[in-house]
Length: 256
Ligand code: 13P
Image 1 (cartoon, rainbow, N blue to C red):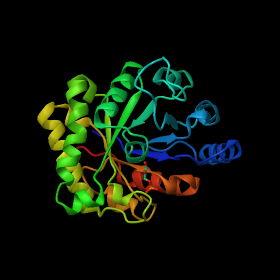
Image 2 (cartoon, protein in one colour):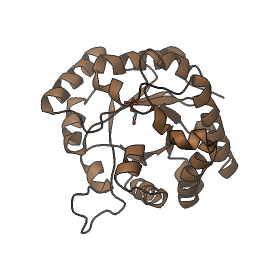
Image 3 (cartoon, rainbow, N blue to C red):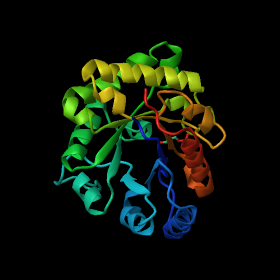
Image 4 (cartoon, protein in one colour):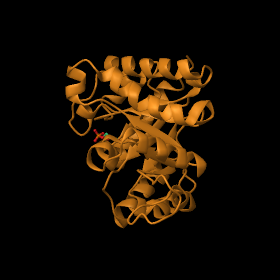
């Protein structure tokens, strides 16, 4: 059974006042029913957000963490530090990290290994560019991005992983993948996971990300292999994140 997961990625947005108002709205909304809700603020606000959402059931994660647990890495943050701030999750391989900050497949795998060692739950982000989709290589790109990580972490690591399929052409563009396009890639990803480690595939959550809104979320959740969403822009408006949570509640867990 895969419990739905709604995750908001604030990217480099937010400040202290924003966090207070956001957490207040989450508290007033009450606990989500059979849906996991997760927020990824900028790293400097992790502990502040953890404290602000205490008691709401909302969990907190970092958008990125380094592959080493300490060392001469100016400007970086170690997974153990993220853990110490009270966060339980971390993203790795977000397309903005890959495109703008040089996160290669191997570095992403290093980061996932380090996150697991620090007892964080990693979400591996994968996704093809528009050119790659148009060239017919979307599946090959996603298979490569996933394969490098799977090779490193094995069955035990896969059992603790979630994956987010975020086609680059759908991120921040308002051009979401159709539910059928997303479902096709999710089913393909699940077949890759199945091929590597049988039983794990049934329980591993695969999220969709890329211009998710309260309007398109219900149709996405209705697909059998879309177990959650990773929401960027819409997650900055707490009422919109909550509307997406309600859409997930309406659909419930996937049991296929
Ligand atoms: P948008 O929802 O703004 O398209 O961003 C998606 C994303 O990158 C989430 O990680």
